[in-house]
Length: 333
Image 1 (cartoon, rainbow, N blue to C red):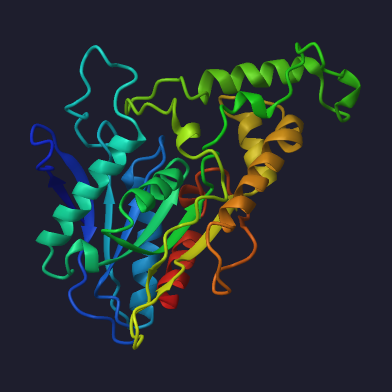
Image 2: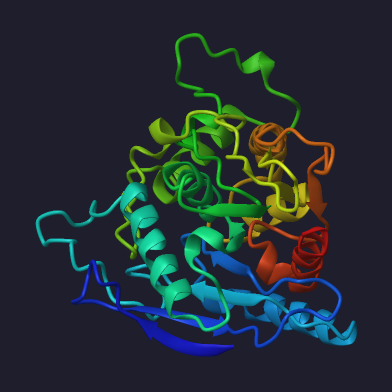
């Protein structure tokens, strides 16, 4: 992977940092020369967190005497090594650019990158594969619909997608609500623990909580109110006598319930495991089930995969499994 700096023509006063693997020749067994794998970060980990998974991916191609496709990772404005968004004025902090702005920047980035690459066609003819973690997953969904007429996203890998349609606090019952029944709580969960958990999630994850990126998340739930719709855009089906469309490939991977709950309990949150396993994990599981319904084709997995032993940052906890999932999608392309 080569580190590069990209300055968007739409924002010439700031730069994005990216890392690239350039495909120099078509695959010996499959033609992936028109494929660009794009990694979309969450809020916490930068593009560097993808490096171990990419190393495993490149090794798998080498072991099979195959040439990998072009790969791109990048840090959004205000993330990792990238400059802050030049449109973030001092009077807008901490709520500055939003998801629509990020999607627009991503499109400009991909347009410039593909047009300058000697190994890729223009963006409209490039087959995109989005590999996403956390908030990168809803960003991929928003991008797909914003630019459905200008791009072909052939495959998606959602790694523990952020639950985009919640404020996180309301996942847990409010013990101070007039209608709350303490008797409805399972053994091992107390009203005091619920109250503490709600305060912790409000402190760390509520959409109003600022972040170093200055990403305004307050309206994300309005942008994506459902996990299972709108469906991901169809793509052109190459090789047909008559033009047709097909659904993209989609793999949804969720975290290991016990590992995630343990990380919540032992980490900064210090939230009891039983509370997470009773309320948060089932809610997240239902959300992931909804994501599967974003495509309707027999070619996609009809169950959410579980990253055994992994918390929310699956690319960090098990990069080799992430590489396998990417390779599987690419083989199916």
